[in-house]
Amino acid sequence: MRDKLVRDLGLRAIGALGLHGVRRIPRNELVSLIESLRPVDAGIELVRLGPDGDGGYLVPNDIEGIEYAFSPGVSDESGFEADLAARGIRVFLADYSVDGPAETNPLFGFDKKYIGCLENRLFLTLDGWKQARVPEYSGDLLVQMDIEGGEFETIIGLSPTLLKQIRIFIIEFHYLHQLWNKPWFRLVSRAFEKLLGTHTVVHIHPNNCCGSFTSRGLTLPRIAEFTFLRNDRVKTRRHRSDFPHALDRENVPGKRPLVLPRCWYSD
Image 1 (cartoon, rainbow, N blue to C red):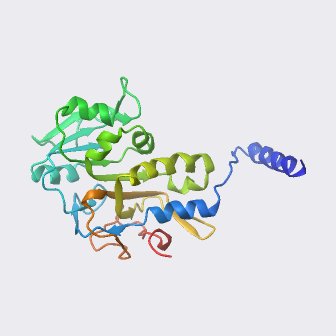
Image 2 (image 1 turned 180 degrees about the horizontal axis):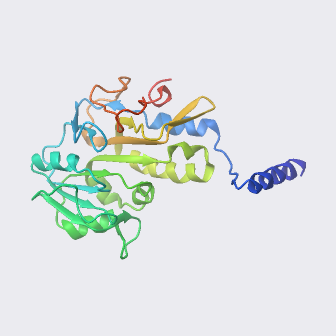
Image 3 (image 1 turned 60 degrees about the vertical axis):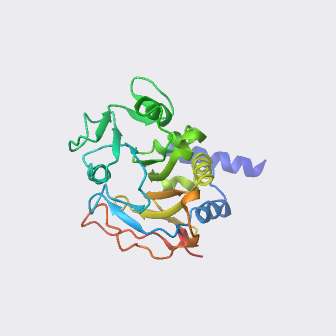
């Protein structure tokens, strides 16, 4: 009873400062999640597509045979999509906040919609988008997603059928520093667990736009780009330690570099 009273008084004091107290996740649970996400050398070289800066990503050189790519989150850079189009891949882009891609290309298709977990005037699900664009296509897909935090609901809402169609999945994850927050950890860990059932992390690149957060010996980039390869395409599973990768570039030139913290790839 005394402990509960002290805790309640502490939470009230925090609330009076305009803050909101939450339960923290046990350290061992966060360590376990990070260890499950350690990138592996899949036996396939990584290549860079897109610009030398924000909007460029490292992907496994295993793109042959992919006919379509989906890229939600447009902003003002379409170099990655242009590189896919140069390889003959038809690319579908979506973003309600803009009126079209940053550049025109005959292999681009655009939908003025956000991608999330529901469908209405503003939103599409990834499944609904694929169904609207290429309903009969059953081959492999590439998906690159940078949707400012909407990635978690999109992944959780993704059908197992479509998830297994995605050979390469590139996702910029936001708010990773909030993983100490127990309710947020539960949501995010479910999304990662779903992805890891079919895919393997082959690269992580922290975005240096927003820095990182360190607590109890663990450093969490606030934003990081993850590259996943479907498990049936993985040839080897040796954990990588070559960070930063030779092809990595800072998202924000001139700002302090942000290297992947060792806890994400080494004991």
